[in-house]
Image 1 (tube, rainbow, N blue to C red):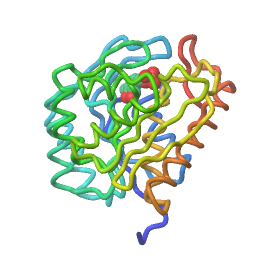
Image 2: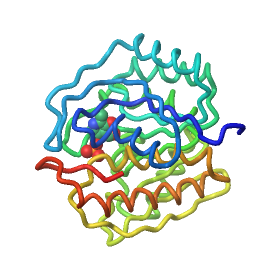
Image 3: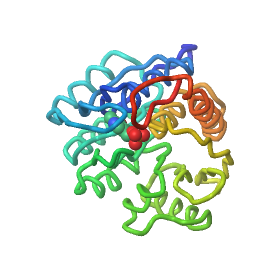
Length: 263
Ligand code: PLP
């Protein structure tokens, strides 16, 4: 890469409260030395207590934003978050096939921690069939992996690995199964790729500010892939960044619900 600062694009929803979605992604890009561009797939009226309304633009407007970005800005990596519905999933898939970015980090956002659906149920299979084959790495948590496969969520690490392999069979280059939902003292993530599997151990950080953790990890991976030798080292450093952002979240005084991370 000739540029020293990578250009990274997030295709995701806006969180008016600033803790998740586009806002978390852009803060993460900046913190990790990347320039951030953004394509907004949904506007959420949201704070730390929950989502009160969602406005979804027409899929053609999402396509127009993507064309504007790729028509001018050399993009080194793309992070994909909330996509709202099947029409937007299809438009994003078509754009990725057309522009062929080197790195696509697909965060399979489905439901917020405040229990609001961020992807219509009939879009889950479309996302699996159209977007997984275009992903460099897909980053489901355990309920999302189960929804994509139509099975119950993994309750232990061997089952996490099996489900990760089953998801990879849909065509993703790699799958990062996030173990935060395991009933375990730590929070292991498993990477499944062509060379096998790799465990990323990690402590469970006991904080109440966890809003935007998935957004932050996936955007950190997208920011770091162009700056690291391989996907594994990008994920290891992205996870370290997330743990720091969780540890530092106690310095924030933002809202009375599930608070954000400190970037
Ligand atoms: N809102 C938006 C716009 C998001 O993209 C996401 C996550 O991807 C969330 C909310 C959910 O955040 P969390 O489940 O971490 O509270």
